[in-house]
Structure formats: C-alpha cells, structure tokens
Image (tube, rainbow, N blue to C red):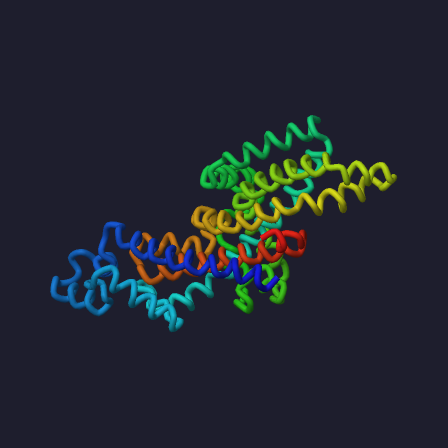
Length: 337
C-alpha cells in the first residue's frame, strides 16, 4: 500500500513544478502591467513606475523571477497581494471554505442522484427510465455553466422568486460571525433563528449549477459500468443461488462497478474547481473562483500564482486519495501495478 502511494506521489511532484512554471509564464503573457493597473496609467511618473517594478522584481528576466518565487514557496511564502496587501495564504484560506462548501454540496448532489440513477438505468436497460435519464444526462453535460446559471436565476429567482440570486446569506437580516468559514455550520452555531435555512436557500442554485455536469457524467459512467458487471458470470451465479435482487445489485454488482465511478468522481474535482470560477462569478459567491477572476482583472500576479498553485495541490491530493480508494475497493489493483 505505502509503496503504491509513494509511486503516485513521485509522479505528482514533477507534474506540479511543470504546472507552476507554465502558470508563471502564462500570467506574464497577459497584456497589462500590474503596477499601471493598480496606480492608473497617468497616476504615476515613469521613474516611480520603474522603482516599483524594481522593488517587486518585475524588471528581472522571467526565469530569475521564477527561481525567486520557487525559493519563496519552499520557505512557505507565496507573496503579498498587490491589491489588498494581505498575504496570499491568508486570503486563500479566508475564502477557501466558501468554495469547499459549494464544491462538496455540488458533489454530494451529483453522487446522491447520479449513482442511483445510473444503477436504475442499467437495471431497466432500454426502458423509458433509461432513455429519459440518458437524454437528460446528455443535456446536462452539454449545457454551458454560465447559460444554465443565468437560466435558473431568471426562472427560479426572477420569475418564481423562490430562491436568492447571490451571496451566501442575507447580510441585512443576519450577522453571522465567521467561526469555521463554512456558512452552513456557522449559521447552525448562530443564535439567529432562520439563519441556517437562509444559508441553505442561498446554496441551492449554485449547487445545482455546479453539480449538473458531474451528475450527468457520474450517471452515465455508473450505467455503463453496471451494464458490464451485470453480464459477468459471478452475477448470474449469485442469482442462481437464490440471492435477493437487492443483494445481487447492491452488493455484488455495485461494488465491482464502483472503480470507474470513483475515478470519475476524483477527476470531477478539478472540474468543480474550474466550474466554480464561473459559478461563483454568476452568483457572487465569495470563494476562490471569484477571487481568481478578480486577480486576473487586476493583474495581481502573487494572488493569481498562489491561487492556481494551491488549487493544483488540492487536485493532486484528491487524485492521490482516489488511488487510495482504489486499493480499498479493489485490493488486487495494488498487485497489478
């Protein structure tokens, strides 16, 4: 088990450094000087501009800037935001709980609906339920996040008026102190009545928008994997022994069909984090995605570099966790590698 995970970790480290370098260079290819963006093109003299660029090391060659940045990262210093003058780590971990809360809710929504729907579609293969679910999954996978989000805002929030359109909670009605950073938990800890339900209402629409694509993928993958497993000899043997259909489907078939489903769930994490950029922007959700977009617009190099690097670390950690789950669900995978 340990050797298996160490091999995966050894492959992850060089990937991480390559991603850091590509991100570092790509950010600097975006037009616009970060100093001019923050001070205004006419708000500073050329001499002062050059002095500030020298202080931030922006006048050095890119490779020297990159080596200096790597040295800082190895010491735990991701830099200071050019906009807020706060450390990047502090800003990231202040906003990160909002993104985690939204992503976990979206993934829970996708798994709780996608896996049972895929199983039922496989069991009822060719039936009305199967055809309906597969049609909906294609539609869900094909819809752009920004279009789906705006559509829900217009219908559910605008026309029907049953859901809020932005933020995590009604800031006028409730004053929730940030204890954990997770609004659902903080609202439960708060003495304000109705705060939790209000936070839940604010979460519903962005959760649906962000979770729709993973739901469609998980449902289709579960159906495909279940169809393959249901045709195996051991499933026919289990039925011949007189085992109940629930035991055959729920234990013998589903467990062996979970390997590709777990893979899809793990890979969906990167999709959730990238989708969160659009979702958080549409719903004014104060998380990492919205912060990254604002950092691009402000040419805030330290915030953008740190945000991308930390998100990449999270995705890689999740992939390692998926590999660990492989070993638990199907131990023979370790011996096959």
